Length: 345
Image (cartoon, rainbow, N blue to C red; front, top):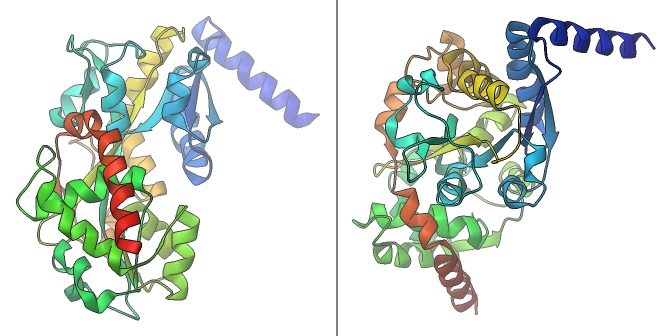
């Protein structure tokens, strides 16, 4: 009863503060990220503005935007390349630079815009794709280049992600490592074949891969920096990540607003808050990411845990043309599926 009264009182206070009962509903993936968003972004935002907020967990965020019921959400977190894909549709609300003033502090190449130049995606943080390894079985020197993944000495000791991600992330990164780019992925095909040949398994979930790395069943895998951070935080200090000499693949995560969702002014204020340094620092420190806001100053303790600085990481990141990747995504998924079938048979 007391908890109900407390919650009701909070809603009343927020309503009185703004003169409205409008609520901003943010859809994202379930788990720790959703809790971080609620506790370290939405709670302080509501305290500062009086605008009520709520997190809703969904299994497929981009699918939620494309759903006929998308307007029930005011904000949705998507992967960057999905956000780029959605920017070419009429599914997203657009905002001017004046409406999102914090955009001036974001790298232009990671702000998602539609054909009219309006902002349709706010990059809230980034992680990166590197080579994650169990350092009881290997070390960073083993993975100085992405090309090392094709070395026959790793036969049966690596893992690969599903084709939907391998087509967007692996194939793109390997093409870059061999002199190609997002438009010319042919140079990456042989390296991808080598990884497939060396892979013990195709992992089906992040939890699955965490287990394989932790038990040593898999020595190394192209994987996400944020997952390494979480594993180390949970006590698995033998899981490390290497950024090869060709760079790591920068993976920004963006928040979009489905068109027709309502509460536009409250949503605009919320998106601007997400673009700001304060919220991005909170998300990064609690979730193992890196702010996209150029004015964000990460705490010394967090930088020590990362073992580097934001500026140093940015200098090592490869940022491909995600529009080209999206436009060719289905075709490349088919290619990767065929490669996996051919190499393993």
